[in-house]
Amino acid sequence: MSTEHLRQNQIVAKREIAPKTYWYDLYHPKIARKRQAGQFVVIRVHEGGERVPLTLVGSDPDRGTVTLIFQAVGHSTMELARLEVGDALLDMAGPLGRPTHIENHGTACVIGGGYGTAPVLPIAEALRGAGNRLIGIIGARTRGLVILEKELGSLCDRLEVATDDGSYGRKGFVTDALAALIAEGTDIRFVLAVGPTPMMRAVSELTRQYGIPTMVSLNPIMVDGTGMCGGCRVEVDGQTKFACVDGPEFDGHLVNFDLLMKRQGAYRAEERQIAENYEHCRIAGVLDA
Image (cartoon, rainbow, N blue to C red):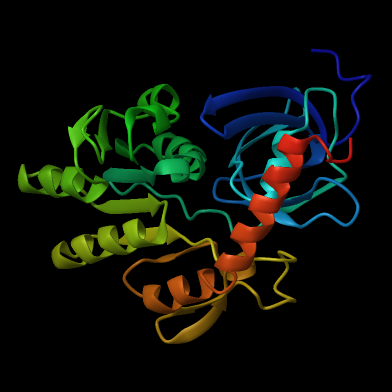
């Protein structure tokens, strides 16, 4: 692919990989060269737009592209989903956050719940590269919401899929699949879980019983991505941490999940109303071009 005509932050590929879940490849050579597993960017679609943190799912330094995957569930991600190949973001800051600490644990298990499978993918790749035997678990409400099965499966020695309604794979939750692996004697030495906060808490509570080290990637409210605003503060082992600069990954056995969920829900009503207003305007055809 020739890059001579490309602008920084320009979308070079777009596909919908599940309902309202999009895969974007964007041109940003510097971030493509520097990003490491576990890091993220903060993007803005336009001047005055919300700053949105998104995990760097992958990169191609030779092409100068980075891969972002997101769900169009709020006002800003709905705006992002309206862009097409050839359009460009206003800005993209990164890579931000601490890279994942990667080592050879022996057998590692990576768990993605819903959209959380996207942030798991680059970490799985790095763990595999470090020589780990890799087990993957993907969870979703139903078959149509399972994402990146092929991509994660290509990295894993074993991949389990669990759906809440039993429409695909095991019926139940990711914790059911993990418990079954442990019960059959699988010697799991490390677990990484990314997804809805209740899921990450449930995984952490399960692994705590067996003394399995567990990391989770937290997604609190975040604004600037540099630790200045304090919006992403979380409590870990009784201490205040900032997910954007101290994380986003933390020991799941030390995270105060109750406080995290309370903070995540602080603006839920306002977020829902803004998203609904945006959708009504889109349907009515009164959005700005």
